[in-house]
Image 1 (cartoon, one colour):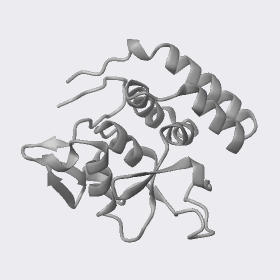
Image 2 (cartoon, one colour; image 1 turned 45 degrees about the vertical axis):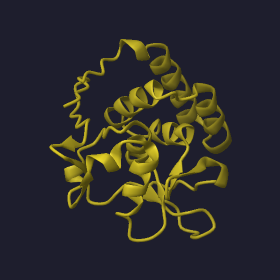
Image 3 (tube, one colour; image 1 turned 90 degrees about the horizontal axis):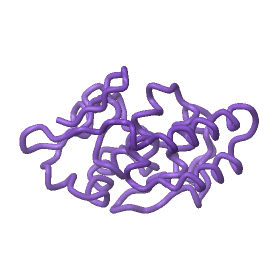
Image 4 (spheres, helix red, strand yellow; image 1 turned 180 degrees about the horizontal axis):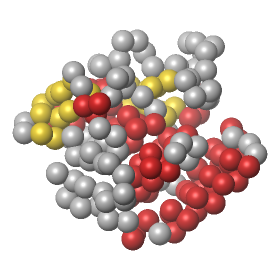
Amino acid sequence: MTEIELGAAFHGDPRIGDMCILGPDHAVPQDFCATPELRATAMAATLRSPAVLADESAVFVYTGFWTINPLALREIPCAPLPGKSTRWTTDRRLLKDHHIVHIGRAHVTTMERTAADLLHQPLDRTLPALILLLKAGLNVDGVRQVLGERFRGRDSWFANRMMAQIAQNATQYPLRR
């Protein structure tokens, strides 16, 4: 099992035996979690209605690792599709069309938008996810652009600085198999 030791609980590799854990009541054969397209499709099948996979579920789609315990999820982290709903997400975010990509059979926030959203969450939730995204090819300049266009004020300034520090030191963070 994969571990990241950063002082916070990390649940890493969702493969247990021949199954891949997607949530407390959802598991699929490991073959269905082999690529981002397959992971996104498997995750979309667990949603009750069309939505955008966001936050930790987007990290899982891009990297194949959970930074939260999938067995403890009450629902898959997602947000309403733009234009389909006027309501904000639970933490008052509104997604723009260019912050969403279509992967497999699912809509997923871009890596950059996922990182920008996570930068506004508590650090124990942010750090493991950002490390995985950086190792998967996250564009730090793209994150800064998203922070500049959507988020304003001191929180964004802090998030920009934090992103730069994490990116600068990403190679020092352990990711073991």
